[in-house]
Amino acid sequence: MGVLQGIVCANITPFFENREVDYASVKKLARYLAGCGVNAIYPLGTNGEGLSLTVEERKKIAEVMVDEIAGKIPVAIQCGTQTLEDTLALVIHAKEIGADAAGVVTPFFFRFSDQGLEEYYSALLEAAGEFPIYVYNIPTNTNNDITADVVKKLCVKYDNLMGVKYSYPDLIRLKEYNNTKEGGLDVLIGCDKLIYPACKVGAVGTVSGPAAVFPELFSSLWTATVNGDEKKAQKVQNIIFENSYILAPYQEIPMIKQYLKSIGVIETDTVRIPFTSITQEDKAQIANIINRIKSESVVI
Image 1 (spheres, helix red, strand yellow):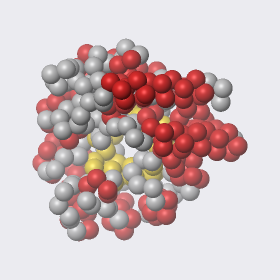
Image 2: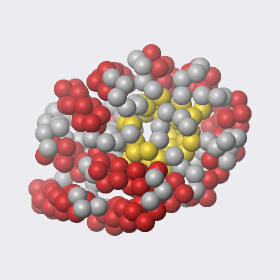
Image 3: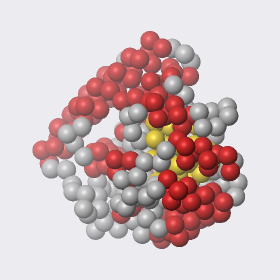
């Protein structure tokens, strides 16, 4: 089993109202995540607005997170950018500061060939040495879908390819990834609605943004799954499934920030343009929904 397993929180990035990074809140967020029950964290990915940050901002956030977590739980830094050079710089930086692994989203916007994606990840894996790397595949956002065949070729050449974070509801592809390596390649599902089914076909966990809001619910699902309590696991998965639809009308990143602000973990719920803030009316509705879900979760 690799670095990441169980409930991995894809955490947000706190900003001041002027949209500059709030590093004091980054520290508080790290402390909160280290103690809330999640198994690992994944900064600077989609929920972390990583692609809206400069390389230098991303490096500093990574440093603060790693220092503040101090080995309590694994930290895998999302290092993917649009250029190989910047991505490589962030991977090497993550390695140097003592992160436990790096995630690398596929290049985006332009459509790339299988050969191009293989060469891209080969360059990163080669340069990283023994440092663990996870491929991050979110094809609906990136316009590129890394195939199981490409992943298998990379597995043959590089022992430091630890797994795939797969943010798409396709359990067949997930199993294909799992089968690319003798003994099974680690795969983490990035779809809250399918955590338990994904684990039944070989996933080793999930990467979830809402886990920062409902850590007790997600941890309960993972504990039941590990313990083989299928009745409870199915019950909790169904709750998460239904709640995903209830919260779907609202922007996920601002919603998570709103909650973390409400409990004093971060100072503002500011997002970076072109994200937009939630209306006051929606904030009231979201608060009521979250409070109801959390109160119901207590009795699980």
